[in-house]
Length: 143
Ligand code: AMP
Image (cartoon, rainbow, N blue to C red):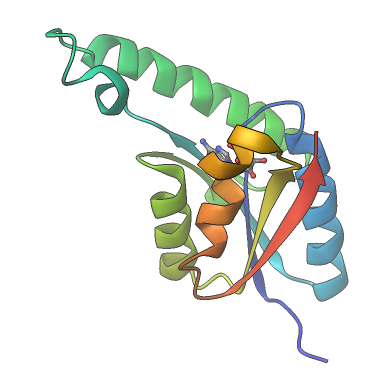
């Protein structure tokens, strides 16, 4: 049976992330695979850049530092080595695909909320990751 050698799990650092990690760790262990973790920070300018004429760089740096600290704690708790921790600025789907390709991941693990109504129409990160991925994608039910 084919096995995975490099797994990339994507976490939003919410409380759901432990469930995603549990599943990714179990698969990594069974496959003796290397496990990487990515957290993507969306630039403030994406949301407000056109509307509010101000320099976001200071706040953006602060957000980056806090996210890096949180990811460090999260990764240490789950035994993921420093070299396998990634904090990236950009759009989650785009950056998750880019790192998966760059690192040669053969499986991406993401969380997926059951969505209904309008939220379903608006789509999810898990959906975005699935479309356009060049490797397998596992959506772990969370929430
Ligand atoms: P969502 O569709 O935004 O509810 O997110 C579902 C899953 O997508 C999360 O459990 C993560 O696996 C992944 N995800 C969402 N946002 C991010 C992010 N900023 N960085 C990395 N992964 C994310």
